[in-house]
Image 1 (cartoon, rainbow, N blue to C red):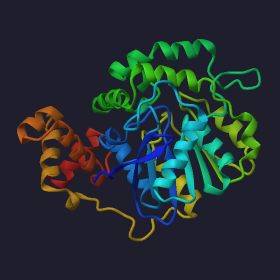
Image 2 (image 1 turned 90 degrees about the vertical axis):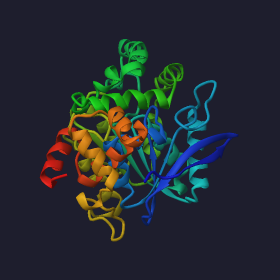
Image 3 (image 1 turned 60 degrees about the vertical axis):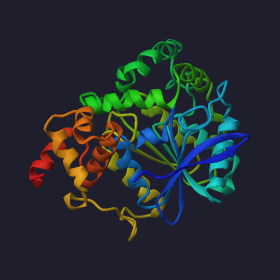
Image 4 (image 1 turned 180 degrees about the horizontal axis):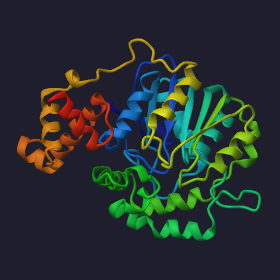
Length: 350
């Protein structure tokens, strides 16, 4: 079941957020570039990632202002405004203190929040991130001016098909369903114009000077061979944040829910709880017995080769409902691709 979307007020704007899980501490997930709370749950990999995080904490997720279900803005927000959105969401969710998990662009934002609000930050996790977006003479891991221009030029193409951006998550390249969802996710998360404005804003990110001021336990996670941000970015962060722990994981994908997501989740759980075992009572039903009658029907038709639209027409439901049933089935059966789903369905005689 998807969590309920609620709104927090931040400077007169409404910031959409969701809360799931009942763990002993709060974890705020700060997504990268853009996000969309509702469309996220249509993707089994991402839904499974969120549910797994929520198995050992109370997870708070939100859409930054100007993106997703949060209020649109006329111009890209400042770092200070985005940081205050985190505070507003925590206040609205009744969270006095939380760990922050910053993905990609969410990393520098989480670092700034931890330095500005140390009493409200219990720990910091930075995944696939960086200290500075653009290359500098003392920071060779950033984007060159040519790469920056190429990034801007590719936004329209990314928003139309998702093909350009998905190159940075090679494991998903052969998954047509994922490619279709990714393009829809981007379009729902922000308009091309807002995306362009956000990229220009992100190109100015530089948190190098404040890294020594991070005073909370910090975990730096990075896939060694990922194609979006070089692992040198993570090593730089770990060398300059006092006491930071760096874990380099094998893999080539940028987003944490594609590829070996469990490796990311295990390191996160160990860092925050001291154990990889899930707390009692925090698990969710899995296995064939946990599938509803409708989920079984959708799985049978999907592995038979029917598309979500064809299944929707046959069962007289919406294609989005079909996608939701499939996402739930992926989670309950512990699979991450259509091939694995077909094999698992055959094993179980579905």
